[in-house]
Each structure stands twice: as structure tokens, then as C-alpha cells.
Amino acid sequence: MAGAGKRKWENAIAGAVAGFSSVAILHPLDVVRTRFQVSDGRGGSYLPIYKNTVHAIYSIARMEGLKGLYAGFYPAVFGSTVSWGLYFFFYSRAKDRYMKGSDQKLSPTHHLASAAEAGALVCLFTNPIWLVKTRLQLQTPYYKDRPYVGFSDAVKTILKEEGWRTLYKGIGPGLLLVSHAAIQFCTYEELRKIAVNVKSSRERTTAVGGDRLLNSFDFAVIGGASKIGTMMLTYPYQVIRARIQQRPNSYGMPKYFSSWHVVTETLRLEGVRGFYRGITANLLKKCSCCFHNIRCLREYPQVVQRSKGQNWCKQFLDLFIFFKYYFYHFHNVCHHLCVFNS
Image: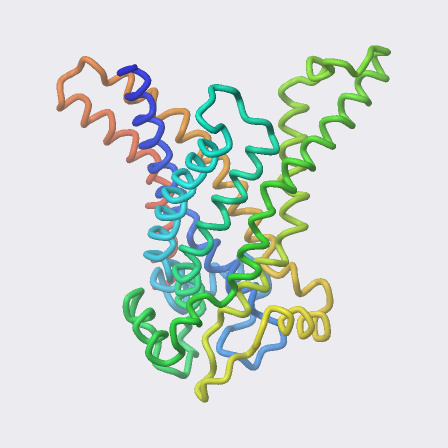
């Protein structure tokens, strides 16, 4: 029991390390994605027109420096930490309720219901954090109004000028994004069945127990395809949420009055393409984050295991080398951006 408890703590710390370091390294892509999402590509606003993701990163680094690339970094880290903590809390509570004190395993339907319930509750708790993050990321040198100084100043200003209801703008699309996990699960199952049928027909075997016909590469392709397919279906919700969360103009007039207003105006002015602005930056961020988190979750417990039985100085040195390795790319990014800015 004690060993299992220690492993849980090691995995929890590894998850925290992976989460924080991925946010720290990939936050510039998050800023670029948000700015693309709210840009209609016609100009005439406080946001510059960016040609592509690389041009956006270079332009922000040259015009605004690291401050621009890491705008909204504090609410991003805070929001991610709170989200994961609340998610696992609500998820475990929901599973316990569905199990009703028995030791039986839950069905996939119950797991999906638990995940949906946890996701909806987390969305209600964290929507104000994501709204502030979005607004901080959209502040540029061209912004005419008094900019928010930071997270606390943004919250105070919003409450004073717009009221507490504003903190829950975009809650509708946010709740719809909870369906992401369910859609991905269903897509994965359908693709898995298709792959099993194709392989069984080629090898002239039955599809019963056909998972044995699939290798690691097959599962990786199915998982990646289901993830990308789900993201293509649910990404418009992110665009709608980002656009409705924008700060009003100098006269207190919002650009969009509701989620439906965002949908109609985007279709009228930009077409379906408008709902996929920033998709490239989002794909780069998601893929990089996935590879980074998997590697971090795999290697951190190994570092801890190797350090056991050694003196505290050696343990500290091993952990220092581990963190230095994972923040090496972060240091390189900062260095090159400082060169661009100069």
C-alpha cells in the first residue's frame, strides 16, 4: 500500500511537471492561436494582420518582445493547475457515485458520463480565468484603451466596468467543448472496428477478438486520427468562445452580443473558413504538448526511482539535471526571441 501511494505521488508530480513545462514552452503558440481566432483577416482593428504562424511569432517577438509572447501566462498556468485538480476531484467523485460502493468496474458509458460531468463543473469554475487569459493575450501596442496590468487588475476592471456576468461570457461554447472526449471515444471505437474488419478480411480471419490483429502502429494511427478528427469537429467552439470573450471598445460596445451572433457574422463575412482560424497553431501546440507530456510522464518517475537510496545531495542533482533538460528548449526560445527583439 505504501509503495502504491508513493507511485501515485510520483505520477502526480510528473503530471504537474509535464503540465507546467508544456505551458511554459508552448505558450507563445497559444497566444498566436488566440489572436488568429479573433482576427477576421480584414484589418481595421487593434490586432495586426499575420500571414501565418511563423510570421505571427516573429512579429510579436519583434514588436512586443517576450512580454507579448507570454501575455496571459499567469492565468494560463493557474487555470491549467486548477482545471486538472478540479477535474480529477470531480471525476473520482462521479465514478464513486456510479459505482455505489461496489468493487465492479465501470462501463465505458459510466466513464464518459463521469468525464462529462467533471468537465462541465470544471468549465463553470474556470471560465473567468480563461476569459481573462484571452483578453490579456489580445492586448497589443495598438490597443487604444487602458490595458490590463495583470490578472488581478483585469478581474477588478471587468467587475467594475462590465459586471460579474461578463466573467461567464463564452460559457455556452465552453460547455459544448466538454463533448470533445465523448466524440473522440466514439470516433476511436468506429475507426478501431474498421481497422479490425480490414485486417481480418485481408488475413481471412474472424473479427471476433480482432484487437489482436492490430499492432502498436495501428493503435497510434487510430488514436491520432480520432484526435485530429475530433479537433476538427469541435475547434469552431473555441473560435466562438474566443471571439465573444473579447474586450468591448472604448464606448463599452462589444463586437459580438451572443454566441449565435458570432456564428452568423462569421459565416456572413468569412464563411466556414473563419471557424478554423488558428488551427495550424493549435495543431502544433497539441502535438508538441502530447509528445512532451508523454516523455515527461515516462522519464520523471524513472529519475525518482534511480535517486532512491542516495543521499539528498545526489537526489537534488538528479532532479536538477532532469529539469534543466526539459527547460533547455525554453531557454533557447527565450534567447532567440531576445535576439529578434533587439
